[in-house]
Length: 234
Image 1: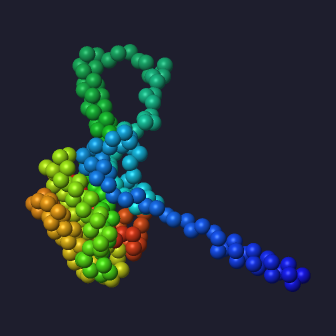
Image 2 (image 1 turned 90 degrees about the vertical axis):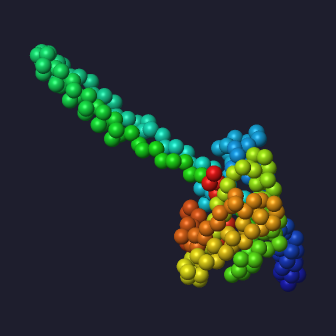
Image 3 (image 1 turned 120 degrees about the vertical axis):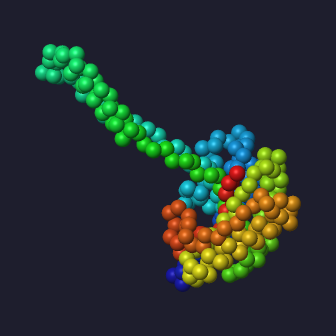
């Protein structure tokens, strides 16, 4: 009995120790990805299959595509057929003209009320996935490598004439005034680094949003809201 128990324990230890670690690989930013997002040059991949920020579960390289235009309502109520009792003797000419004018005005008003207003599409944006030292605007070595990829993208012919807004975002921990200033400094640090890589500083604007624009589906306190994004503005 004692030998059996010892053998079971030994088997359990061996099983736990030999279990392979599950590596969660995250897609890295690429020049091709930025060209797809900001210039529409997506190669053979359909635009609808590109990763977007709109999906909260997406990890890694988040790309934002322009928002889709709202579609007209598909299930519009069918026109009511004219009942037999509604078929009456045609009115006199003057009454018929007045009724036609009223019907025309009513139809125009009904069409205007039932047509959804079209909202402008959101400008393309991308999470640059640039990391910083804790509570500072100092870009990490890995963040610099990813910032260089974005800089290379901005120097490509497809993006060379475009301007961008670099947005700094934080979570809500630490207070709004501190995070607003930190997010602005981080955006400024990215813009300055891009300039060092040959991107004209006049092509890049900066703004710090602090915790005011959390990711879709995320609470303001979620650490995943700490990010720097690039938004196409012209």
